[in-house]
Length: 217
Image (cartoon, rainbow, N blue to C red):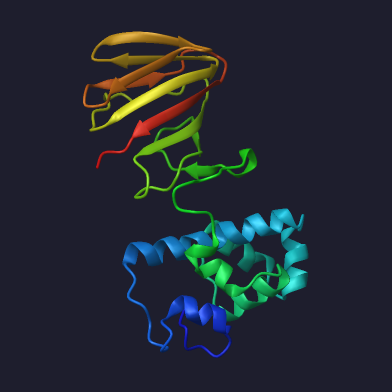
């Protein structure tokens, strides 16, 4: 997005540049964070308004496919698209591009229905993120759903950091340095991940846990 485009409001232009009209110098990390926050903000407002994708499309004259892509972060909206969505959701454009108008960076609130899907290479493991974004926080926490028979793979895992698992339901077997721990509802395990470890659900029932990892710096 560029502040010089004619369709941008004065408030948004102030966000994108200085008082003299010249752009502020922002880091790539900051710019990426702003761009990545647009989709979740649109989805949050749409849910607040109890609007379906089609209803928001009708209000904004933006296609449902485009709105879906923006919300999922697979497409960066043009200024025209952002202006239309902002008007339909009754928000200034600056709300979507100015970090100062959103929640303070020291706190992240995650509603139960809006957990972020976290990629994992392990089949049968689904992670719903409940912690702040990487780069701003050292701890990553997710609600883990482990399907029957799922495991971490043939080779043991070994990497820097720590992990803590607290079981909510079901059973999970965790092996650390050759010692196996059987975790059931209410049980917890905390270990350093620079020791070889692996996990599996040996039962016919799904398991559910709060899974926390300390991100290496």
